[in-house]
Image 1: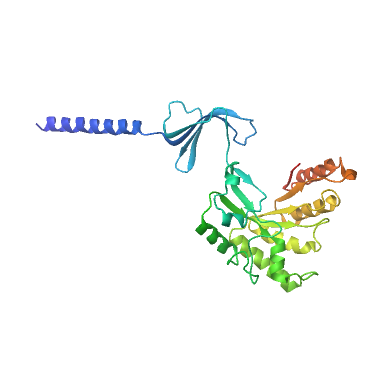
Image 2 (image 1 turned 90 degrees about the vertical axis):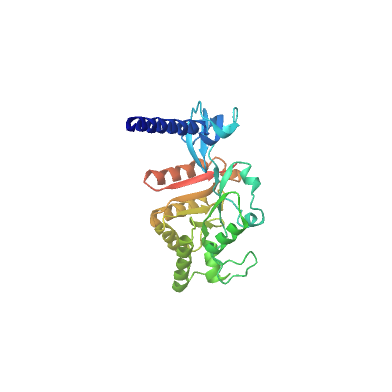
Length: 294
């Protein structure tokens, strides 16, 4: 009788295990399955044909997923499947508060916006609250979260914004006390999630370069980056590039330059000299990059 009882337990156990395995086999492998797309993965391959399996909020498989099932399958034959694009230079700071759906971006595949340039949403200590009630990045992030957005957002902190908070519209070089306050605001901004320091200068670059170097060093101490807008578009570009490279060298920080653009008939054909200057900086170990638009 005991043997029979043990045998029944074994049979029941095997049966239950078999049923569980069968049920698991019936469950969809993925939540989403994108079938047969031209996959562009950023490795340098133009594209390859394959499938993408998604579970929850993660891509968990890329390749030939023959036999896999999913709660929802999307036929992507003839279409490109790519990671979300990062828009490295935007002015969405306030428009995202008005329309968090950001359809003009997400329908073009942009899933990350980088905001901040000549001005940034913070710091705003002591400034009129015409654009919002926050004074720092933490306050802006809270407002953005309350409104709700469809994409991811990061921001740089603007050198010009920090200088405005500390000095208003006064001209002239900052005093030692003002420079110290500027560094404090840069550090606070980085602690609150700023990605790095951003500048925008008219032709020729900064009037007081040491102030920029000060804040770039602060950003670098938080593993941030330095990005700068080219203002001359070929008129004083050597001077501006020399300063950007100086920032990379002295602040020991990655530098990205917006945007290589040459105008004026006398400057046609000179872009190669600027590319050579950037390549030479990279050859000696500096992390300097640039982008170009038509």
